[in-house]
Each structure stands twice: as C-alpha cells, then as structure tokens.
Amino acid sequence: MPRSVLGSLALSTAMKCSPPDGCSLLLRVNASLALHESLQGLEVCSTSLDTQETQCQTVQVSRASRQQAGQQLQVRFDCFEVAVAQTLYVTLRTVPHFCGVQLGQQYHMEDCREEDVGKNVPDCFAEKLSYWVDRSRKVILVQVPESGGPDYYVRLCLKRFTCEDAGAPVRGDSAGDPAVAFVDIPGDEACAPSTCIQGRRTDVQFSVPQQLCGLQCEGEGRSFLKNLHEYNFQ
Image 1 (cartoon, helix red, strand yellow):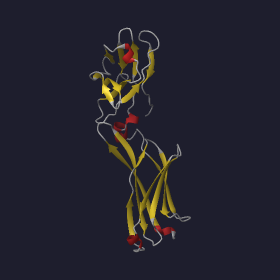
Image 2 (cartoon, one colour):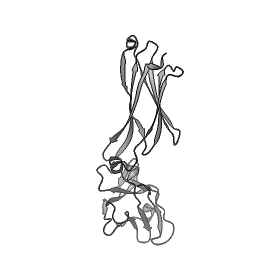
Image 3 (cartoon, helix red, strand yellow):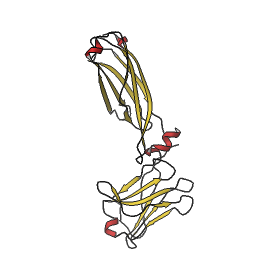
Image 4 (tube, helix red, strand yellow):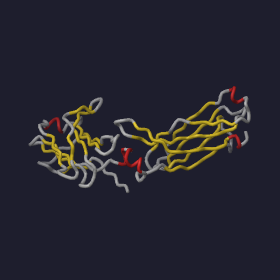
C-alpha cells in the first residue's frame, strides 16, 4: 500500500462542559485519506509522553467505499479525554497495518494560563482550603483561600451514592472573615469516613466542588490538620 494513502492528520483542542461538574479538555482528531481496495479502516492512538498511557480508536471503511479507489475521504474521530498541560504523541495508521504507512504528530495541551482553561477546568482552580475539627464544641471550621482570591460556597455532606447535604451551603468571604463554621455536628459523625467538606468557587460558572473526606480528628481543640488541595500555577 502506498504511503500517500494517508493524507493529513489535524489535531486541535476542544472543551466539554457539563454543569455543575465543570469542564474537561478533549483532543479532537481529524484525518484525510485516499481510498484503497486494501484499506479496511484507520486507527488513531494518543500516547501521553508523561505517563505512557495510550488510548486508541478505530474507524472502519466499508467495502463499497473501498471500491472507489483514489477518492479522498475526510475522517473525524471521537474526541480523546486529556489533561491540562499534557504532552501527547498521536499516530495514525491503516487497518490492517502496513509497514511505513503511518503519520505521527506531537501535541501539547493548553495549560492553566490559557484564559478559558484557567476559568473552567477544575484542576486549575483547586485552591487551598484548610479545616479544623473541634470535637468538644462539635464544630468544624473551614478556612477559604487567602485574601484577594474568589469567594467560596462551603458545605458539609455525607458521601453515599452521591454526597448528600448535611447542612446548608455557607459562603466564605475571602476579603472579609474567611472562617466558616458548621455547628451541632455530632463528634462521631464529624469524624466518620463518609463525612466530607466541599468547597466551590463562586466566580466560575461551572465550578466543580473540591472534596475532602475522611476528616482527621486527632489532637485537641482547634489544631491545624491538613490542606484540602494545593496546586501551584502561574
């Protein structure tokens, strides 16, 4: 089979948003080819150069189409789910595989400095939240990120099939008093593995809640425990 059967490989970034779960990045793959009687389909594979994880898709070419040898065909594959700032190597091959008949291209996904990605993808706005557990007072205190950042809605929930409300959401003001208190939480319930803290930014339309379960209650009083998540980006 001639190498010219594979014409081009075009890669681009797409974004899928599902309120209220936020947005995720996708890799869009388009290809062009010249039909050949021996060509049964196309296979495209995306490999992460960071983790070596590979995802593949195959598109079949019908027998009727194969009889139209030489005719140009445009193929649009389903999108691949990818991560922020991921470096990928994408290969396009014929089915069946023929030695030397393939195209390859490296592609770098946008990072959090790109405006739409930074505002809508959860990995980019997982800021630092801290919590304290005071079992004697039956209080859980949650501190939203430092002054100057966005405000947060914070809630306590019980994780079953979904995370069910254990109290009304409370807005934490990063410009004012950043402490949010949940009172009247029985000590055993507060420290149960199913009890979770969720924080959601108020300035992002599809903000995904950052969730921490299995709250640790060691120590006395309001001792500092741990951060919910912390990401450093420019």
